[in-house]
Image 1 (spheres, rainbow, N blue to C red):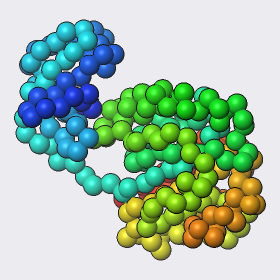
Image 2: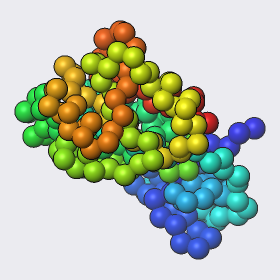
Image 3: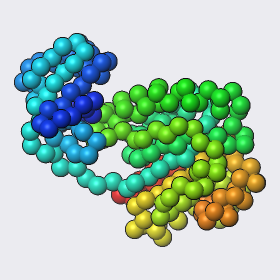
Length: 237
């Protein structure tokens, strides 16, 4: 039987701890008991953990043997900020698919009130990513960056830097990945509702990014993010 996985809030030697609402869910909702075993992720490795102490706000584990973890591609998603309810959906699903980092981007067509409020949403986005990471049995949640402007996105490092473009008609994302199967460090930039402006696409081009198409259908921003992420992991795994 597959053991449930938790991402520890604290790790020290052979001890790991869940705290706050994280611990409360395990202790009260799931009615955890002493001696019960789970897989405990620490961000760098995965080990079997046995509960040795429980309170409503703190659950302590003794860590035992290591659990094998399969390597995954390093995929960063530079996602232009859009309506928060839909963006939360995209963060959750792209986390489940395996992205390593999510960078919210303030683009030219990002609505001003969303750009102004984005930094205050970071903590909520991190909670969503943590929950999605445990549900999908990841070792660590993706890093959620603070909102950045396009200049910072253009400078992101990666062996394969891709920007989704509605202007591109020929080169498909899947084709680029098929010809770059050895590239395991991918950065994908996705525009806001309405897409990137011509000026922004020109900046990507001058910075050495590769423009790709996601197909002929006009997708919502959250659909494009999830679909593109799924294609990347399908081709690189």
